[in-house]
Length: 136
Image 1 (cartoon, rainbow, N blue to C red):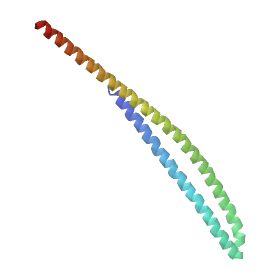
Image 2 (cartoon, rainbow, N blue to C red; image 1 turned 90 degrees about the vertical axis):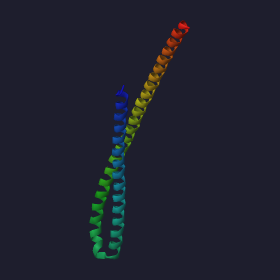
Image 3 (cartoon, one colour; image 1 turned 120 degrees about the vertical axis):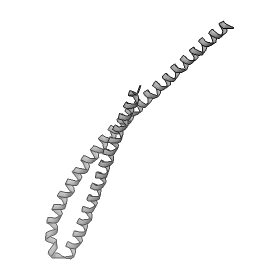
Image 4 (tube, rainbow, N blue to C red; image 1 turned 180 degrees about the horizontal axis):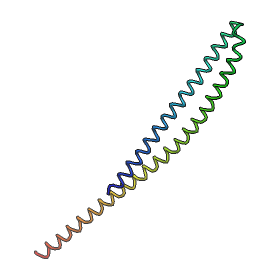
């Protein structure tokens, strides 16, 4: 019976797929964190420039407003990606459980088949012994 093996392969494929999606979401999350840090560093650098050059001070206010908007967009993206990571984590947990269930069922099926084979062999040996004892 190969259906058990097929179910296991399908379950492993689902686990692999969810793991890839989760890894991609975590990479996006890390990239967004880096962009957030880069924005902060750029803002700090521009603040220092504005403090040292009075002509640039008036432009800094507009620059800060722009950076605040970008920071808000990044924060919204981070929240979305973090929710996706939580969702994928739950999907991965479920996929692992399903894979383990199929593997356990297949192990039980194989153990049952082995027991049946052993019982048939024992029955054949018993019949052989009975026939032999009748001849003797």
